[in-house]
Image 1 (cartoon, rainbow, N blue to C red):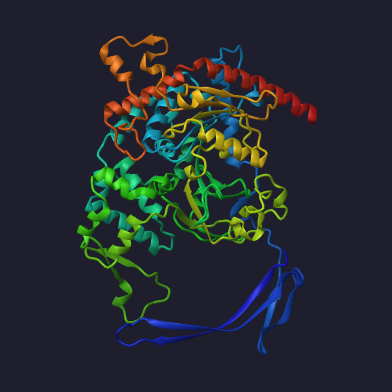
Image 2 (image 1 turned 90 degrees about the horizontal axis):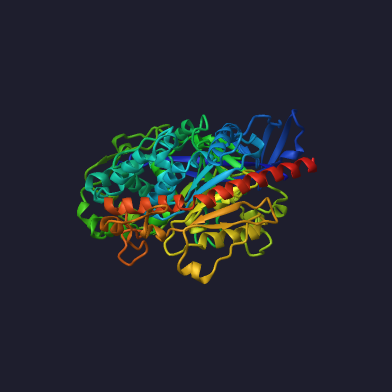
Length: 612
């Protein structure tokens, strides 16, 4: 690597301004630059060196190089973290017992034969949030929620999961109570999100973040709006709080998805999947992870150099669902009934006064602070925030300064075979960047498949719940392409034109020749036999029952369109029930899949023993 110590000699002149501005103005001039090759220094021995700074200048220095044995503040490696491994050990006992009951087995399968089941929820705003509640309720009713090890969400589905996991025992309770609470939230008016009091709260929050040195982006504002949509009050919870919900493996392990992008590049050309769990945030592509409590802090070469508070969950919800931030003007139009031009009437809401002007001399050890009072020179900035179309959340790059994978061209997680891809250029890899630009994973694939297809998680069955609008199989096609590019085992996805026009409730995809490829059960968002049956095999009889089932999800005047953030209670209940029903009506397929997964797991066990 040939690391170098860079030496810079500076001269700083302080100039006291006149009475107009009592601040001290500083002018810095670089007098010379020099370098010392670190590998030229003997380890553990103090040496004197004369460092040439150019133009006849030099500097006498005493130097001593030591090999550091300190632990890094980030985790490097592709293995699962210790906490997730401990969770798996406990959770497989829960899953084993659940499989014994639901599959009517004589005895519980041993832990090494327990299939790893991952449940995935796609994006889709409040439609996804509502639908995912119904899907999870269906799994719970069949006794299969306890058979799931991972529960993963993207965009709108993360809003459902992050709300559920505020209760450490949510999956052990009847989900009807959680669904009733969600109905109250989804059916409530969202207009208050744009009230003068709420706008002032947003500004104060963002202003505080800026003062404390955090990067403030448009998606932080969107996160505060999402906070109102989901809670209608300030939510103090953080992602690390959810450790209580998995401490005893009482619930599936939650994984939330985002992708790292590059400004001015499309998600098709560049998107690196970033996973958020109660214990870690990181990139399996690079094998680099940071503790969830330290996310959004500043790192260099794997060391924590500036600790910032862990973001509240609302800011992550804004990032995870930032696709909607791209059309915030449309969101406001839908919620309030007018566009963002109404902000012009709040010219006296916000004013910022810098407290350093109260003193003749500013103490250089003091942080620059601001006081928010009515009035307004920063109103335009705030308005620009609202009217912006920037959708990424910029945060500190915890991989900054690290050189990861000197032989990365041979690692399948990198798309180096495509010569024009950023991965093909070592100096353009993400650890070389100052910041991460994290966005809604829907900008790449609208379902978090890449996070559970990592070989370290060894997933056997994926239950894919798709809530995308008019795209029943797109996530499967994109995932198949993603896997082909990286040589990840994945079953071949085939469906007919009729399936695309009129999708069925459930599809099963399996590669009989490759036990390493997961079995995929895919549930498109459809209203098929639910129109005639209120429960599997139980026909609708009364006119009221028939009317409840007679609706088209993706009609022109549908209440479930992506930018609609408020559903009437009747519409909310319909959407929950059709998703619950679709799971219940495909019980045989689900049980068949789990039996097959048990057999394949035993086969894997035999193959692994023969290989060793």
